[in-house]
Amino acid sequence: MSRRTSEQWARQADLPEQVAVDVLVPTCNRPAELAVTLAGLAGQSDPAFAVVISDQSTGDPGWEHPAVAAMVRVLEAQGRPVTLLRHLPRRGLAEHRQFLLEQSSADQCLFLDDDIWLEPGALELLSRALDELECGFVGMAPQGLSYLGDRRPHQTASFEAWEGRVMPERIRPGTPGFERWPLHSAANLSHLSAELSLHPGQWMPYRVAWLGGCVMYRREALDDAGGFRFWLDLPADHAGEDVLAQWQVMERFGGAGILPSGAVHLESPTTVTDRRVEAYEVVLNRDPA
Image (cartoon, rainbow, N blue to C red; front, side, top):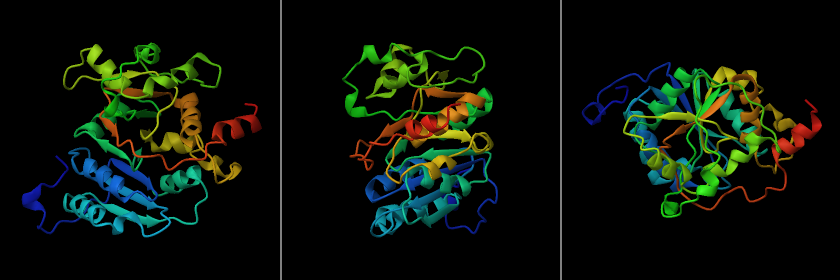
């Protein structure tokens, strides 16, 4: 186990120079949620990982909140390097993600939003799945557990497991693949896991339109596909940057969701309130390819 346990916390030990995964956390004005997100990371055993937090809060950075500061100390005591960065001025979601990507050097990078709690073992499962599937990204769509009593079979009808190798796909509005997007609403994946009678340790990859909140990339694949460098073509107020980046990766390397999802959405109000500009609409309309 790469995590140092409590009897080792006070012993002198060097932090690892290289890790298997960089966990990249963009945050803005959410110290309470960020503390929960980091607590979820503190519950992960393997693989070895580092954390990069980039804060765009309008006031004090989130890590000055006592709860966040405590979780940073826990992670560092566990042997997880934590980098705290203030990234201003704000130039939009895509630019922020590109900035985080440029801080990463590990083979795998997990973009984890600041309002997601990860079940213990989720990081290891994502990393193993990415290795075994040899595709561009895998992800766990965050589940809203307040919806556990709300079954939506009309939204899960599009579920399709990957059989064999994950292949490249081209997703655009109007294509059949685009119609998978409702699959990740509410607690749909939790219901699917129960219906499929998945047992502990069992997992399966499935086809996605895109994933939000918890996506692990092969860093080199994301960079080769352009990363989030399209931010230069967007106004600062935009949404859907993760959709466009994933479509670019999927076309070249393929991508998959992972069932069951051990990612839980904290269901706090969104900080992205202006969705008039969708990144893919701007960039794809500019680029006829």
